[in-house]
Length: 270
Image (cartoon, rainbow, N blue to C red; front, side, top):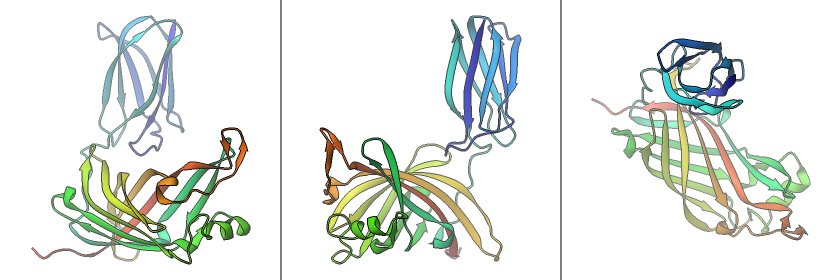
């Protein structure tokens, strides 16, 4: 007998808990059922080899169905994404201001080829101009390069020198996004230019829209997450030390993770 397993998640990676996973054979007869756990994982055991259909249903999400062929010990479906029901209601066109107290910019680098080190840029500001159509929207962000914080004062001092950010010469990091390409109901690619250490180069952000709603102070907020990767060498941040042959103290690629809340400032008059 075979087992079918996998993990359910939203498009931005959050687990979907309590979803029903039903497995039917080629004749449409139910052969197994399971509920997803707190981590989104599920497993349906004691299934006969052969073709089956897997149907996933969860409150607030569009149902999902796929055909699988079971053989041997089982099949790992990996990550199964569930789209939110009805798609996402896009933000109201107009000016939205980033709320730094409820937003974050994080950078991650590989250290010694083995593990990751993390840092944050703590001071930044920015505006989003939401357009209709949404694809014509734009964003402008300014970051205080000297606000880098990796929880190590000595390392932070080094990061501020010319070996890395050179904050004395280039105190600000800038990003100008102009135009988006839709991936699906909640995911978009933001096309823009990153200005870092005197170099300006194109950098796309892989953005997920989290939704819009009222806040506790009478305002309207929209939430977004975004990720990207940049090459340090492309932005003249090329300091390094070789620990062993082929192993560098700091990896050449930086992963950037953004969590953004923006507050509606003004909407265009009808």
